[in-house]
Amino acid sequence: MVQLIHPLGPSNDSSVVIANLPARDTERSFQYHFKAPLCTNWDPKLPSPGPGELHDLVCIGFGPAAIGVGVALQDVCENSTIPLKCRPKVAFIERQANFAWHVGMQLPGAKMQISFIKDLATQRNPRSHFTFLNYLWTKGRLNRYTNLNTFRPSRIEYQDYLDWCAESFHDLVHYGQEVLDVTPSQRSSKSKSVDSFLVTCRDVNNGNLIHYRTRHVVVAAGGRPNIPPALAQGYTAQKNIIHSSQCMTILPHIMPSPTSNYRIAVVGGGQSGAEIFSNVQSAFPNAQTSLIIRDGALRPTDDSPFVNEIFDPEQTINMFHRKGPLREASIIKDKATNYGVVRLELIEKIYETLYTQSLLSPPGARPQSRILRYRTVTGFESSPSGAAVIRCKNATSLYEKSDEPLDELLEFDAIVLATGYVRDLHLNMLKPLEHLIAQTTGVSGRVEWRVGEDYGIIFDPEKVDRNQTGIWLQGCNEKTHGVRYPPRPNTAAKS
Image (cartoon, rainbow, N blue to C red; front, side, top):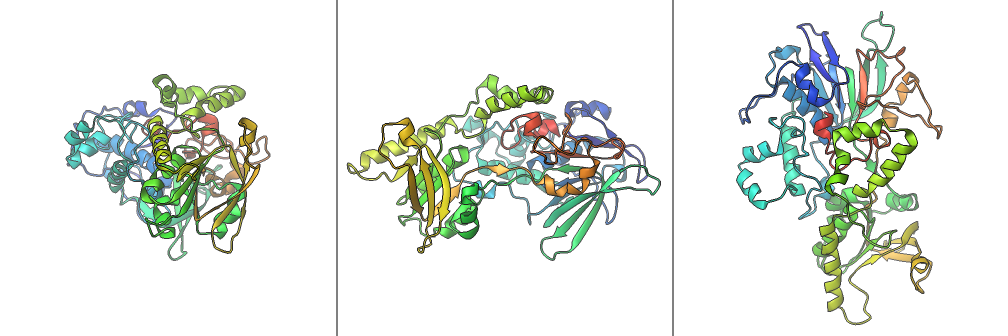
């Protein structure tokens, strides 16, 4: 749920915010209903702000969450009678040179984990130009896709869908700019409280600073690779230790010969780790591959219908209103839907592959592909050969009758860390605003950015005029709103 700007008049400073309304009520707040049929002759409805102009909204990041915000605004303006010059002035700031979504994980054959109905628009407005079905129809593939008989498109096709949506906002996106910070601002010297913000960016090509003054900010910056502390030194020092987000972009350069007998390890027992483990067996058929996991087995995703309701917008609101200890317990229970789990069909495929390899291997030979269970990576060692050497604690003997050593040194030609992401990029960006929030420290002593039901940061009302300005966080609210499911299934509902 993101607050949308409703321009009321012809002046450059006459916008107000529709406060705290779920997206499904946005249509009523704009006093019209979406009755337009699907169309291909569609034109953008948001103006491109001029240099130095006060923005109504600046989105930091241009991934699915930010595009979802843009889509919601476009839909609201689609049939509006408000003059173009009076509509919300919006800008998106993106560090990358162009739109790209999980390029490093575009593995051959990989499919989405969610239904296409959870796209950028359908759950909020099924008549939107930006639905996945309209994308298929516009591209001339609707009938053929229907024949696939699946709700889960390939990841490659979903990337193309997102590209198609992103193209509609190309005039509003400032690529190649890295946001440094967000600082408080006042539009008038007479203002008694903060009523706008200044977003400062750096051009990644020439280092020049760029400033955007805006009433509202949405931080949808995504995450950064989560590198286990035990491998932080190796990740920095060695080119052959990479994160899963770099798999398809860097691994082919590390291992240029597909037929060589490389030694490849994947660390992590979740969906990404399993996908990469399965893929490298096909991409490098002569390689020895190892999947290193802490658990004793790959665990299946629980995506059964009743459990899947936790991602419904109403359930997200229910989660927010639960008391702290109950909410924490609920989130731990719900993580079986998303964390450290793998879709059942992929588990079955991996199991069948390992079984077939065991049939073809000589008795007593080391399996070509193996899952190293009950392992915890504890350190890294450099090797004169340039190989990646890691130390592991092997807890197998605690669970099984085994004479395997407790400590192991494992050597590989490449290691892929499928260890997830840390979603804390907002902390440094918003540091200049810490003095504006009502409660500055949490239990840990760190600054705690508390958000409301609508994902908006709760500022001290005496310091920030909530009726004039605000900041919303996207993708980093698990502690308050519950487990998220890639790639943001509630993007349409939240926008």
